[in-house]
Amino acid sequence: MMRHLIRRVLAVLFYLVVLLLVIFHQNMLAMYGMAVGMLLEALVMLRAKG
Image 1: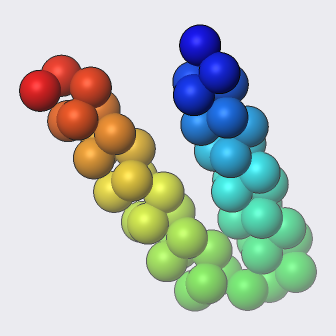
Image 2 (image 1 turned 45 degrees about the vertical axis):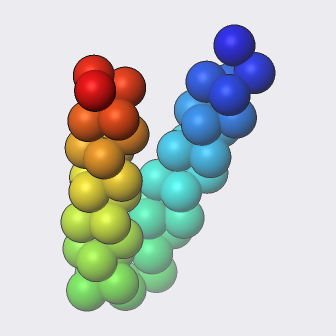
């Protein structure tokens, strides 16, 4: 239970940073961040299923 909460909080903070990058017109860094976030999410889901 605690692991899931920590993971969700980290995900929210990560995407908050991505949003701030977009707001400050750092679009390329934001795109890299989104790609890393999606990859991490897919890896977590893969681990959870396997």
